[in-house]
Image 1 (cartoon, each protein chain N blue to C red):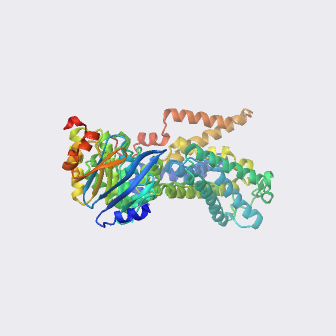
Image 2: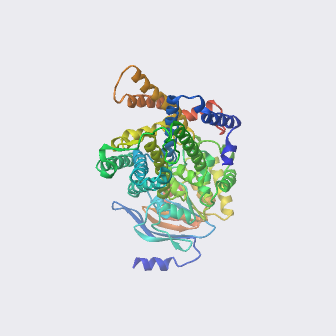
Image 3: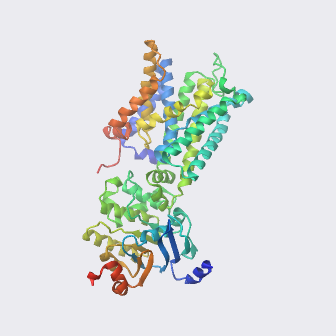
Length: 334
Length: 252
């Protein structure tokens, strides 16, 4: 921990502290709407970190992270509505459930040398047929969905995640901050180095003694487990769950936007991407509502365009460029 | 039956690496057939031969890229044929690739740290090992550069550095001098001789005869996948079969 801190240049430390203070103080000045946007920023930063671990570091493209999100959400929500087991315990069931699903996907793909685009297709397939499965699972309401009671005044309880926006705001903030810290630590760990080696050149990684199957499986385990925590958050924040929404490919795409735009394989990329993208997307929604336009898929088109612009201007993402501009990269330039 | 035969052939416990009667066929084409040789601890052993003689195939079998169709490979008394390349690397065989493959987007230092993490558990120690090795290979000044931005000679040195960082007992070098200028060749020859003096056994495939004669204590010559000569350089390089098939009659 201290090691990561020491590596930051001085102005990086100052910027970090200022931003952290601003995030903690934000609810004092932000109205309900702004707070809801900020919750989404942290939520996407958190999920972006989880996905980036697998793609940005270990180099494995998953387009089906909605699977782990959905499993996490359904597991914790079902435990609460059916058995009265609260989310703080439920999350520790949700993590292994999603991680086990990740193991199955990873094992099937990597044991049988399904790589790259074909692996991505496999991840989509798993998310899709899990969606179909939940569409017919009566105990969780099948396609009619599952609902948590809407927060009534006075139910402001942290222990069953039944609180107001403030609770979710700080929860999302803590998740995003903790994930960023975890990723920064992993990046400088032996495991992190192994992931980079696997991403860069699997054959050369093997020659350096790395069991690449194992390295990829660990990345999947952590990534899926983290995504499941995001799923628990999703379930209790939105308080309704439909298979067609939570397992949708649109969810998977939504998760990967922030890290791609912010910078794949960087520690701060997912955060920067979420900070840039989420408010833009929400503004678009608000504008469309204001002018009474209702075009389905407008947000997807917007995401697509943003992606095209970023890939054209800064193929490695906004953060590497921003870090250079701000003088925050401590790596000497050749 | 062949099992038995190869066992008795490799009975010498003096060899660090014993290759006994290995063969590899690709769609009926015999890339390597019944090749046997031994590398003793502390020596520099060279495998030479014209293009397509099966040198890299032989190398890939030792390093575990693929398993031989027949024959055995014994390293430090343990049979290793058919093991995965990462398992072989962990047993103490480091390798370079003929077409260099450093981790392109990583810095020179990170490349070597990854190698060093095979012999140590902490990044801190790996950094120390990496610095030492980078200094030895004259890459310390370039440690913060991105590997893909290096010149070819430097990438070749980086390839050696990464393999060396794993702390191998046997270093497999696949044409590390190819494409280098004579001065660069001499530089890397000096480095390799230095490493060898410190106890690293080296098995190299090489086309640059200047380097082979400068380094190798023994040479194996491959032609059409078969060994046609083996022995000390002076002897082997005068062998009429070698001259005819590889060096060319005019070099006499």
